[in-house]
Length: 389
Image (cartoon, rainbow, N blue to C red):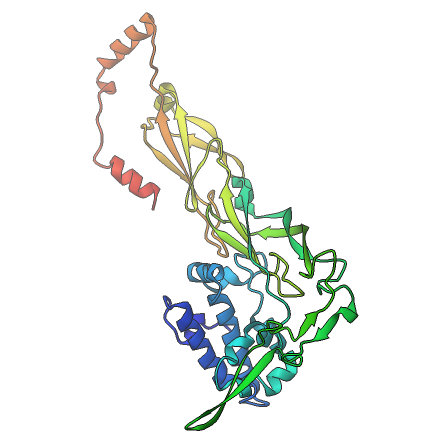
Protein backbone atom coordinates (compact mmCIF):
# COMPACT_ATOMS: atom_id res chain seq x y z
CA UNK A 1 0.00 0.00 0.00
CA UNK A 2 1.42 3.37 -1.07
CA UNK A 3 2.27 5.85 1.66
CA UNK A 4 0.14 8.97 1.99
CA UNK A 5 1.68 12.37 1.41
CA UNK A 6 3.06 13.80 4.66
CA UNK A 7 1.54 17.24 4.04
CA UNK A 8 -1.82 15.61 3.36
CA UNK A 9 -1.60 13.61 6.62
CA UNK A 10 -1.11 16.79 8.65
CA UNK A 11 -3.45 18.90 6.52
CA UNK A 12 -0.93 21.65 5.73
CA UNK A 13 0.39 23.32 2.58
CA UNK A 14 3.87 22.50 1.29
CA UNK A 15 5.30 25.92 2.19
CA UNK A 16 3.88 26.07 5.72
CA UNK A 17 5.91 27.50 8.60
CA UNK A 18 7.30 25.54 11.54
CA UNK A 19 4.60 26.94 13.84
CA UNK A 20 1.82 26.01 11.42
CA UNK A 21 3.32 22.53 11.13
CA UNK A 22 3.46 22.07 14.90
CA UNK A 23 -0.13 23.24 15.37
CA UNK A 24 -1.35 20.94 12.61
CA UNK A 25 0.48 17.94 14.05
CA UNK A 26 -0.88 18.66 17.51
CA UNK A 27 -4.42 18.80 16.15
CA UNK A 28 -4.12 15.46 14.33
CA UNK A 29 -2.27 13.81 17.23
CA UNK A 30 -4.95 15.00 19.66
CA UNK A 31 -7.65 13.50 17.44
CA UNK A 32 -6.04 10.06 17.30
CA UNK A 33 -4.30 10.10 20.70
CA UNK A 34 -4.42 6.63 22.36
CA UNK A 35 -5.82 8.14 25.57
CA UNK A 36 -8.81 9.37 23.56
CA UNK A 37 -9.13 6.16 21.57
CA UNK A 38 -8.38 3.28 23.96
CA UNK A 39 -8.05 -0.06 22.19
CA UNK A 40 -8.58 1.50 18.73
CA UNK A 41 -5.83 0.07 16.49
CA UNK A 42 -6.81 2.22 13.51
CA UNK A 43 -6.49 5.39 15.58
CA UNK A 44 -3.13 4.19 16.90
CA UNK A 45 -1.83 3.70 13.34
CA UNK A 46 -3.02 7.17 12.34
CA UNK A 47 -1.32 8.55 15.46
CA UNK A 48 1.96 6.90 14.40
CA UNK A 49 1.46 8.04 10.81
CA UNK A 50 1.14 11.65 11.97
CA UNK A 51 4.28 11.28 14.14
CA UNK A 52 6.21 9.97 11.13
CA UNK A 53 5.08 12.91 9.00
CA UNK A 54 5.97 15.42 11.71
CA UNK A 55 9.40 13.89 12.40
CA UNK A 56 10.38 14.35 8.76
CA UNK A 57 8.77 17.74 8.06
CA UNK A 58 9.93 19.33 11.34
CA UNK A 59 13.56 18.53 10.47
CA UNK A 60 14.83 21.11 7.96
CA UNK A 61 17.27 18.73 6.25
CA UNK A 62 14.78 15.86 5.97
CA UNK A 63 12.09 18.22 4.73
CA UNK A 64 14.32 19.38 1.86
CA UNK A 65 14.96 15.76 0.88
CA UNK A 66 11.26 14.89 1.11
CA UNK A 67 10.22 17.91 -0.99
CA UNK A 68 12.75 16.94 -3.67
CA UNK A 69 12.49 13.14 -3.75
CA UNK A 70 9.29 12.27 -1.88
CA UNK A 71 9.18 9.21 0.39
CA UNK A 72 12.22 7.67 -1.34
CA UNK A 73 14.31 10.61 -0.14
CA UNK A 74 13.77 9.75 3.53
CA UNK A 75 13.26 6.01 3.43
CA UNK A 76 16.73 4.76 4.51
CA UNK A 77 18.07 1.42 3.22
CA UNK A 78 20.93 3.11 1.45
CA UNK A 79 18.68 5.68 -0.18
CA UNK A 80 18.87 9.42 0.37
CA UNK A 81 17.54 10.39 3.74
CA UNK A 82 17.23 7.66 6.27
CA UNK A 83 14.04 8.33 8.25
CA UNK A 84 14.36 6.85 11.72
CA UNK A 85 10.72 6.48 12.59
CA UNK A 86 7.67 5.50 10.60
CA UNK A 87 5.89 2.29 11.30
CA UNK A 88 8.88 1.22 13.39
CA UNK A 89 8.33 3.96 15.97
CA UNK A 90 7.02 2.74 19.30
CA UNK A 91 4.69 4.79 21.47
CA UNK A 92 7.62 5.35 23.83
CA UNK A 93 9.62 6.87 20.96
CA UNK A 94 6.79 9.19 19.99
CA UNK A 95 6.02 10.45 23.49
CA UNK A 96 9.69 10.85 24.42
CA UNK A 97 10.42 12.75 21.19
CA UNK A 98 7.28 14.86 20.85
CA UNK A 99 5.77 14.71 24.36
CA UNK A 100 6.17 18.45 24.86
CA UNK A 101 3.63 19.08 22.12
CA UNK A 102 0.90 17.47 24.21
CA UNK A 103 1.77 19.15 27.48
CA UNK A 104 1.99 22.87 26.78
CA UNK A 105 -1.54 24.05 27.68
CA UNK A 106 -4.65 23.30 29.75
CA UNK A 107 -5.12 19.98 27.94
CA UNK A 108 -1.70 18.76 29.06
CA UNK A 109 -2.87 17.07 32.23
CA UNK A 110 -5.01 14.69 30.19
CA UNK A 111 -3.14 14.24 26.94
CA UNK A 112 0.38 14.01 28.38
CA UNK A 113 -0.79 11.96 31.33
CA UNK A 114 -2.66 8.71 31.73
CA UNK A 115 -1.46 6.01 29.37
CA UNK A 116 1.09 8.35 27.81
CA UNK A 117 2.77 9.11 31.14
CA UNK A 118 2.71 5.44 32.06
CA UNK A 119 4.65 4.67 28.90
CA UNK A 120 7.28 7.37 29.19
CA UNK A 121 7.55 7.93 32.92
CA UNK A 122 6.52 11.55 32.25
CA UNK A 123 10.07 12.66 31.53
CA UNK A 124 12.44 13.16 28.66
CA UNK A 125 15.78 11.41 28.70
CA UNK A 126 18.76 13.73 28.41
CA UNK A 127 19.29 16.33 25.70
CA UNK A 128 19.27 15.42 22.03
CA UNK A 129 22.60 15.59 20.21
CA UNK A 130 23.21 17.90 17.27
CA UNK A 131 23.44 16.90 13.62
CA UNK A 132 26.82 16.52 11.94
CA UNK A 133 27.70 17.40 8.33
CA UNK A 134 30.48 15.83 6.30
CA UNK A 135 31.51 15.87 2.65
CA UNK A 136 32.29 12.79 0.58
CA UNK A 137 33.97 12.93 -2.85
CA UNK A 138 32.96 10.29 -5.37
CA UNK A 139 34.38 9.34 -8.76
CA UNK A 140 32.13 8.95 -11.81
CA UNK A 141 32.58 5.18 -11.56
CA UNK A 142 31.43 5.14 -7.93
CA UNK A 143 28.42 7.31 -8.73
CA UNK A 144 27.43 5.09 -11.65
CA UNK A 145 27.39 1.85 -9.67
CA UNK A 146 26.81 2.99 -6.07
CA UNK A 147 29.36 2.42 -3.35
CA UNK A 148 29.81 1.64 0.33
CA UNK A 149 32.13 4.03 2.14
CA UNK A 150 33.56 3.29 5.58
CA UNK A 151 34.81 6.48 7.21
CA UNK A 152 35.94 7.65 10.65
CA UNK A 153 33.87 10.51 12.04
CA UNK A 154 35.11 12.83 14.79
CA UNK A 155 32.16 13.52 17.07
CA UNK A 156 30.68 13.24 20.57
CA UNK A 157 30.17 9.62 21.60
CA UNK A 158 28.58 8.16 24.78
CA UNK A 159 30.94 8.21 27.76
CA UNK A 160 32.29 4.71 28.39
CA UNK A 161 32.99 5.39 32.06
CA UNK A 162 29.40 6.21 33.08
CA UNK A 163 27.65 4.53 30.12
CA UNK A 164 26.22 7.89 29.10
CA UNK A 165 24.44 8.68 32.39
CA UNK A 166 26.75 11.55 33.40
CA UNK A 167 26.82 10.31 37.03
CA UNK A 168 29.80 9.00 38.99
CA UNK A 169 27.78 5.93 40.04
CA UNK A 170 24.17 4.82 40.47
CA UNK A 171 23.94 6.35 43.93
CA UNK A 172 24.86 9.75 42.46
CA UNK A 173 21.48 10.03 40.71
CA UNK A 174 18.52 11.22 42.76
CA UNK A 175 14.89 11.93 42.02
CA UNK A 176 14.30 15.57 41.20
CA UNK A 177 12.84 17.23 44.34
CA UNK A 178 10.95 19.82 42.30
CA UNK A 179 8.85 17.48 40.14
CA UNK A 180 9.15 14.27 42.14
CA UNK A 181 10.59 12.40 39.18
CA UNK A 182 7.76 13.25 36.79
CA UNK A 183 9.77 15.67 34.65
CA UNK A 184 6.78 18.03 34.69
CA UNK A 185 5.34 20.57 37.06
CA UNK A 186 1.67 21.43 37.30
CA UNK A 187 0.16 24.76 38.15
CA UNK A 188 -3.48 25.30 39.07
CA UNK A 189 -4.98 28.73 38.50
CA UNK A 190 -8.45 30.03 39.16
CA UNK A 191 -10.40 31.62 36.32
CA UNK A 192 -14.00 32.68 35.83
CA UNK A 193 -14.53 29.27 34.26
CA UNK A 194 -13.20 27.53 37.31
CA UNK A 195 -9.81 26.00 38.09
CA UNK A 196 -7.48 25.39 35.17
CA UNK A 197 -4.43 23.16 35.30
CA UNK A 198 -1.35 23.74 33.15
CA UNK A 199 1.63 21.42 32.73
CA UNK A 200 5.17 22.49 31.83
CA UNK A 201 8.65 20.99 31.77
CA UNK A 202 10.38 20.97 35.14
CA UNK A 203 12.91 23.86 35.23
CA UNK A 204 15.15 22.09 37.74
CA UNK A 205 15.82 18.85 35.83
CA UNK A 206 14.82 20.00 32.32
CA UNK A 207 12.22 17.25 32.16
CA UNK A 208 14.60 14.39 32.97
CA UNK A 209 13.01 13.60 36.34
CA UNK A 210 16.34 13.21 38.08
CA UNK A 211 19.40 15.23 39.05
CA UNK A 212 23.06 14.27 39.46
CA UNK A 213 24.75 14.81 42.84
CA UNK A 214 28.25 13.58 41.81
CA UNK A 215 29.25 14.01 38.19
CA UNK A 216 31.31 11.51 36.20
CA UNK A 217 34.90 12.77 36.15
CA UNK A 218 35.52 11.55 32.60
CA UNK A 219 32.70 13.49 30.93
CA UNK A 220 32.04 16.11 33.67
CA UNK A 221 28.39 15.10 33.87
CA UNK A 222 27.55 15.38 30.17
CA UNK A 223 27.36 11.63 29.57
CA UNK A 224 29.42 12.01 26.41
CA UNK A 225 33.00 12.66 25.36
CA UNK A 226 34.64 13.79 22.14
CA UNK A 227 35.88 10.79 20.22
CA UNK A 228 35.65 8.92 16.95
CA UNK A 229 33.28 6.40 15.37
CA UNK A 230 33.66 4.30 12.25
CA UNK A 231 30.54 4.69 10.12
CA UNK A 232 29.51 2.61 7.11
CA UNK A 233 27.60 4.59 4.47
CA UNK A 234 25.72 2.94 1.60
CA UNK A 235 25.57 5.49 -1.23
CA UNK A 236 23.03 4.67 -3.95
CA UNK A 237 23.89 4.85 -7.65
CA UNK A 238 23.07 8.08 -9.45
CA UNK A 239 23.66 10.67 -6.72
CA UNK A 240 24.68 14.13 -7.87
CA UNK A 241 26.86 17.02 -6.76
CA UNK A 242 25.17 18.90 -3.91
CA UNK A 243 22.79 16.08 -2.99
CA UNK A 244 22.48 15.32 0.72
CA UNK A 245 22.06 11.94 2.36
CA UNK A 246 21.11 11.45 6.00
CA UNK A 247 22.03 8.68 8.42
CA UNK A 248 19.64 8.80 11.36
CA UNK A 249 21.23 8.56 14.80
CA UNK A 250 24.82 8.80 13.55
CA UNK A 251 25.42 12.42 14.58
CA UNK A 252 26.64 13.71 17.94
CA UNK A 253 25.60 11.68 20.98
CA UNK A 254 23.04 13.37 23.21
CA UNK A 255 23.79 14.53 26.73
CA UNK A 256 23.01 12.10 29.56
CA UNK A 257 21.46 9.46 27.34
CA UNK A 258 19.61 11.85 25.03
CA UNK A 259 18.87 10.83 21.44
CA UNK A 260 21.80 11.20 19.02
CA UNK A 261 21.61 13.62 16.12
CA UNK A 262 21.82 12.67 12.45
CA UNK A 263 24.81 12.50 10.12
CA UNK A 264 24.27 14.61 7.00
CA UNK A 265 26.46 13.62 4.03
CA UNK A 266 27.04 16.18 1.26
CA UNK A 267 27.96 14.61 -2.08
CA UNK A 268 30.81 16.04 -4.15
CA UNK A 269 31.91 14.80 -7.58
CA UNK A 270 35.55 14.30 -8.51
CA UNK A 271 36.25 15.73 -11.99
CA UNK A 272 36.74 13.09 -14.69
CA UNK A 273 39.81 13.49 -16.95
CA UNK A 274 37.78 13.05 -20.15
CA UNK A 275 34.04 13.04 -19.43
CA UNK A 276 31.63 15.77 -18.41
CA UNK A 277 28.32 15.27 -16.63
CA UNK A 278 25.03 16.93 -17.50
CA UNK A 279 22.24 15.50 -15.34
CA UNK A 280 21.97 11.83 -16.23
CA UNK A 281 23.88 12.26 -19.50
CA UNK A 282 27.63 12.12 -20.05
CA UNK A 283 29.42 14.18 -22.73
CA UNK A 284 32.71 13.39 -24.45
CA UNK A 285 34.63 15.48 -27.02
CA UNK A 286 36.11 13.23 -29.73
CA UNK A 287 38.80 14.72 -31.97
CA UNK A 288 39.48 13.00 -35.32
CA UNK A 289 41.72 13.78 -38.28
CA UNK A 290 40.47 15.16 -41.58
CA UNK A 291 41.26 11.88 -43.43
CA UNK A 292 39.32 9.89 -40.79
CA UNK A 293 36.33 12.20 -41.30
CA UNK A 294 36.55 11.70 -45.09
CA UNK A 295 37.17 7.94 -45.22
CA UNK A 296 35.47 6.91 -41.98
CA UNK A 297 37.05 4.90 -39.17
CA UNK A 298 36.41 3.03 -35.94
CA UNK A 299 37.51 4.56 -32.64
CA UNK A 300 37.45 3.67 -28.96
CA UNK A 301 35.98 6.16 -26.49
CA UNK A 302 36.01 6.16 -22.67
CA UNK A 303 32.75 5.67 -20.75
CA UNK A 304 31.93 5.69 -17.04
CA UNK A 305 32.09 1.88 -16.98
CA UNK A 306 34.99 1.12 -19.34
CA UNK A 307 35.51 1.72 -23.03
CA UNK A 308 33.23 1.47 -26.07
CA UNK A 309 33.93 1.27 -29.80
CA UNK A 310 32.00 3.47 -32.20
CA UNK A 311 32.00 3.66 -36.00
CA UNK A 312 32.70 6.98 -37.68
CA UNK A 313 30.85 6.92 -41.03
CA UNK A 314 32.35 8.15 -44.30
CA UNK A 315 32.01 11.91 -44.68
CA UNK A 316 31.34 12.67 -41.00
CA UNK A 317 31.01 16.40 -40.40
CA UNK A 318 32.59 18.27 -37.50
CA UNK A 319 29.95 18.84 -34.85
CA UNK A 320 28.24 15.50 -35.41
CA UNK A 321 26.87 14.02 -32.15
CA UNK A 322 26.65 10.27 -31.59
CA UNK A 323 24.43 8.97 -28.82
CA UNK A 324 25.40 5.84 -26.87
CA UNK A 325 22.14 4.69 -25.32
CA UNK A 326 22.24 3.73 -21.64
CA UNK A 327 25.88 4.73 -21.16
CA UNK A 328 25.04 7.62 -18.83
CA UNK A 329 24.22 7.74 -15.11
CA UNK A 330 21.29 5.93 -13.48
CA UNK A 331 18.61 7.93 -11.70
CA UNK A 332 18.36 7.51 -7.93
CA UNK A 333 15.72 4.92 -7.00
CA UNK A 334 14.61 4.55 -10.62
CA UNK A 335 15.21 2.36 -13.67
CA UNK A 336 15.87 5.45 -15.80
CA UNK A 337 19.39 5.84 -17.19
CA UNK A 338 21.05 8.57 -19.21
CA UNK A 339 23.09 8.35 -22.42
CA UNK A 340 26.63 9.22 -23.46
CA UNK A 341 26.85 11.94 -26.10
CA UNK A 342 29.99 11.86 -28.27
CA UNK A 343 30.66 15.22 -29.92
CA UNK A 344 32.89 14.91 -33.02
CA UNK A 345 35.50 17.58 -33.72
CA UNK A 346 37.47 17.37 -36.98
CA UNK A 347 40.98 18.51 -36.10
CA UNK A 348 42.31 21.39 -38.21
CA UNK A 349 46.14 21.56 -38.31
CA UNK A 350 47.53 24.95 -37.32
CA UNK A 351 50.95 24.53 -38.93
CA UNK A 352 51.54 22.97 -42.38
CA UNK A 353 54.64 22.45 -44.51
CA UNK A 354 55.08 23.89 -47.99
CA UNK A 355 54.26 20.54 -49.59
CA UNK A 356 51.12 20.14 -47.44
CA UNK A 357 50.03 23.67 -48.30
CA UNK A 358 50.32 22.96 -52.03
CA UNK A 359 48.26 19.77 -51.64
CA UNK A 360 45.55 21.62 -49.70
CA UNK A 361 45.40 24.45 -52.25
CA UNK A 362 44.96 21.90 -55.02
CA UNK A 363 42.17 20.18 -53.09
CA UNK A 364 40.47 23.51 -52.33
CA UNK A 365 39.93 23.99 -56.04
CA UNK A 366 38.13 20.65 -56.35
CA UNK A 367 34.29 20.80 -56.41
CA UNK A 368 34.11 17.97 -53.83
CA UNK A 369 35.77 20.21 -51.25
CA UNK A 370 33.23 23.04 -51.58
CA UNK A 371 30.72 23.21 -48.65
CA UNK A 372 27.37 21.82 -49.77
CA UNK A 373 25.19 21.40 -46.64
CA UNK A 374 22.01 19.45 -47.22
CA UNK A 375 18.65 20.65 -45.97
CA UNK A 376 18.37 17.54 -43.84
CA UNK A 377 21.54 18.50 -41.92
CA UNK A 378 20.69 19.84 -38.45
CA UNK A 379 21.78 23.31 -37.43
CA UNK A 380 24.08 23.93 -34.49
CA UNK A 381 21.14 24.97 -32.30
CA UNK A 382 19.19 21.83 -33.24
CA UNK A 383 22.18 19.73 -32.24
CA UNK A 384 22.53 21.51 -28.89
CA UNK A 385 18.81 21.10 -28.25
CA UNK A 386 19.04 17.40 -29.11
CA UNK A 387 22.14 16.96 -26.98
CA UNK A 388 20.42 18.17 -23.82
CA UNK A 389 16.98 16.69 -24.47
